[in-house]
Length: 143
Image (tube, rainbow, N blue to C red; front, side, top):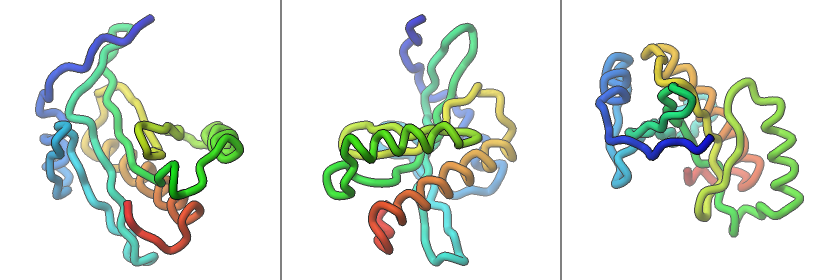
């Protein structure tokens, strides 16, 4: 089954982010960019909520994603890719994907999340991505 093309922003993400009081900006791709602060670790992490959706099997799917590294500078090679695939198996939600030059933790879920559920998913995605960023790049906090 081939997913249908993404449709235009329907305001879903904006409404839920506003409901939970998360500050955001909309990037050039129409995605909602949120910066999550991990105060204990004194780090931040970008998490994006896709402004567009895809449809598959009668479901509307939304993507939440967080960058964790850069392929060229963080040593993401074949061996590391296999390790990331193994790591994805133990994640409760989300998996590792490479898009362009970057590694992302990506969660794809039906678009029926409440605002609180969206926030929980964003926190999980951000935490997993930030942990991987630390593993890949040490103390650098660039993403």
